[in-house]
Image 1: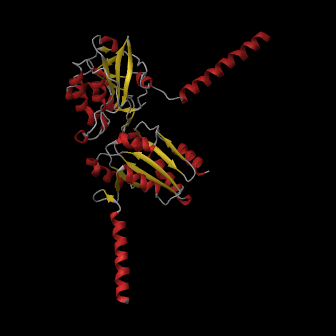
Image 2: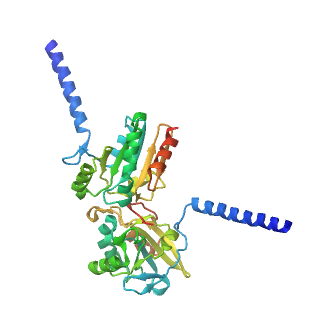
Image 3: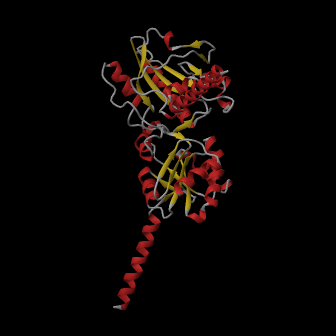
Length: 167
Length: 207
């Protein structure tokens, strides 16, 4: 009987582990989760952090690259207030080597995920009804309020917007 | 002296209210909605001629596309833009491409680079530089590529469709809905456009 119980517990654990591992698809050879829009949406909704700063970017987008250090600094500065940065790459699927190399070279500390969903007209309005689709774009999601920005940020501007969401 | 004071005060009121009015205009949604009359323009083409919509006396309307050399989404759409022009120019809806980017910010979008790109790809349509960047804000374009389909009506260019070329900007092979073609086909058939506005990821216009 004990033996049976042991087997049962063991199988439950291994099952659970399998589910955790299977829950995400990753960009090949990198710690970059790969989502379609629905998966990204559920990842954001179920994220454990209290405040999320979601930045839509791509390696080919010059103003996006320019503002990345501001997001990195924000994530570092506000880590103790449970603020997390999520960098959502909209690179093309055939540019994954470029994305991987970029993330490694810049030693990005924020989590980078890859949104692989070509039918953008379906999901852009779900991110925000006012988003035209231009990059860069940013969502700040707090526990009380949420704001969307179709613009570039300096660190000062980004911090003041975050403070508004936090307070 | 008293008159002077009153006049100064009056001038101040005028200036302040002008600023206030300006602020209100800026916060409102800028650019065209479907049904608006789109402005004509006078812009330089890659062949050095000047192009306006009024030059096209026989056109029934236009497929106006804000696009550029450097944006990967624009590049991914070049062949589709050429195909649109080839299909619809003879039917009365030519493509007019406009590069809205400031070449000082994006050197790859200079007039010379535009000329090279048009030659390399064999553009069959005018490729204009929005010199001074006065045209794209009037239309309300925010990114490249960004399409406006207009129809001529009593000397006006009425906006009938705003948005993407189709439902998969990055991969032509995965397209299942062709928004611009559907819009122009409807106009040619004398019907109303079913999908009048769509969204797509694009590069923000460099200004």
